[in-house]
Length: 194
Length: 213
Image (cartoon, rainbow over all chains, first blue to last red; front, side, top):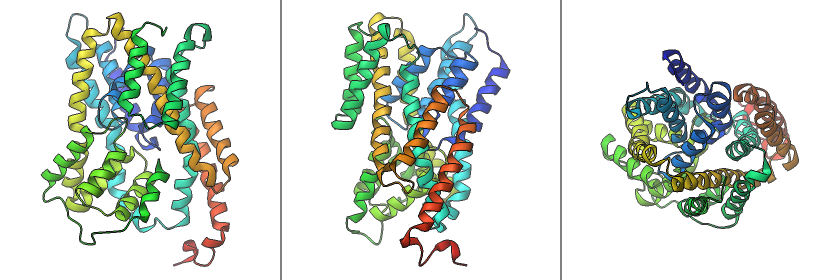
């Protein structure tokens, strides 16, 4: 793969333009980012996408760091042959982070006072309640996209089963997220998951 | 998740005179420590540290800030940090607060990612990552199902709300719509229907704030 300056700019622009659409958090952006990074432009592979999310979940901090891991994957792939991938990956990581945060931070900085003053207004309440069902749909789509890259159920059923068990554990128990990821890692190490 | 925290609003307000961070630097370090304790998102830990440990906000104030953070687009915890920093120290505070939330977690994640680049070809590691990826998907689906239970009391009814969830899911998964076009069509419609319903609610009639000057 070989990527040039226009690809770096394309990615920066993508992050800048979706920043204000991160309603319900960074997780809701995953389907859009999958479309952009994996399907349409082939900036990163399916495995890089999934691994980046898994690593971001296993590491402390806000979920928005998942976005930076997509940039990281691109940086690794965009490294010229023979050079170390780390500087490119770190630059792409930082660039992604800044671009995803900047628009929403600026808007927030300017609009907070207005929202505070008007939080009892019906239109603000309607916005908050009205977007909630859409947020639920985008989050479910995010989880679907992480597991469903191949619908060949005969090969991938262990992935689906493991994800389903994780859903049950999240909904019905209070197991710590690290414990859940640890279970996933152990199951994966057996080589059982295709 | 949100509803759990709404439940806390009942708890008594102990401190009308809040403590506050003594300097922007103190805020930066407090939020850094907070972010490093948050796995799978920072919100639950944020309330504990800001309300219970530091006593910078009362439960009621925290909820108000959180409600506003949710209305504004962008990651909620980032919105919350901007608002807190701005509240106490203006623009510099907001900047340092966001930096606090992201700087050390970014360093940790970069180190994790570098380490992973070196070992990712080991079959054991590749397998472990696949397992963790499947669990990540489950974690996200699980928390969205928890969130969906909050739709039971939705103004446009549970089923009305689920129709919107369903179309959002379908649009993204089957039709690969751009998120922006999807949100710009579904969200305004959902907001409009919700608006019409809450306007009709009896509790909103006597002092309908839209009719006030």
